[in-house]
Length: 406
Image 1 (tube, one colour):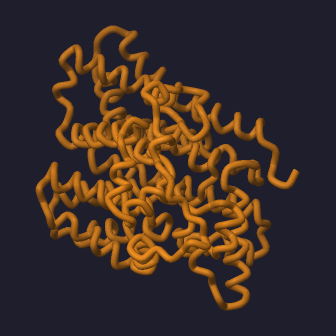
Image 2: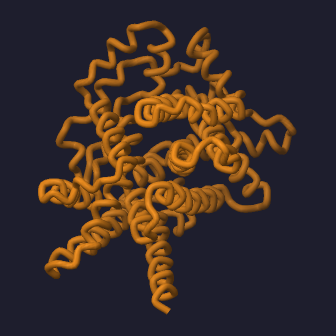
Image 3: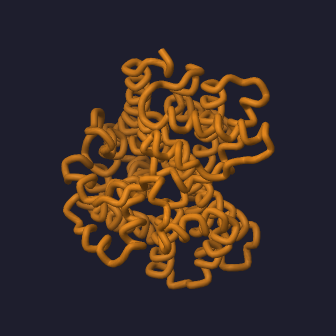
């Protein structure tokens, strides 16, 4: 009976997480701002291609130049076939967008649970990790403020990719099912956002080789690259040969878009394109610092500590003081690739994909204590703050921006 009651409570929390972090999709329209117009036009282009039997797998130069959307020039049409098919079935453009984004958010929640189960056995800790991942301001910014479908898909696929790699490193090379899931996830990232796929693959390869020293764990990434070969070839050809001047692709410095240290700690309002940790993660990491200071932080599992260190390195790389200009001067491939990233803040987004794991461990560790009553209240306050901040951010966007076309 106790297990059934606990399961029911967890299910209620999962529903709340999904509803609170997906509030904009329930309104049935797309809010103005960000890249929404670009992506709607891209889906419209794919729908027209389906009707004519000639699918434009990558955006046309005219579309990229019109919207100044050079960063999405290498995003494949594969995932966007889903909302295009919705429109062919008679669903309106904006409703099809909301339906697709809702499915992406549902998939992201499931993927966050999958990743957390690679680190934790306790169902409560898995729930907390999914909460911090879904309510992360960087995630909500990408999906609703920036309205970047490609990056929203990346946030859905990266937990599958990370969870698969961790399982392979822990259980060994013989698990064929995990091999397939990991390779499919990485291949899917290439079709969602090729420039981010290269970055995430390099980060994952370095982490696996440095922390686990198992070179065979890189093989699923190679298999995923083969699955995403059309996107790989399209990006690598540009990086090596160039020749896409008419696209007007970005090649400027990414330093100016980096973070100042104080911007990481924003909880509610943030400067344009610079979301911070948010109230929930700030509370969780203050708790982690307290546990470390009191001596309880020494029990931090090695795999969780690895995620924390990797996230810390990525956070440092996102600072505006890192001399990325020197990296861009190494040659034209480096200049072209880092230009496509547009901002050093992209590394902060990568870090936020990992921060939910140590944050969940800290809150769960505090929950296991049976001491003063106020210490049991702290985890509940952090959970409520994470949910409230996510709902506040979503509702603020809805109320401050009119529906597209009005």
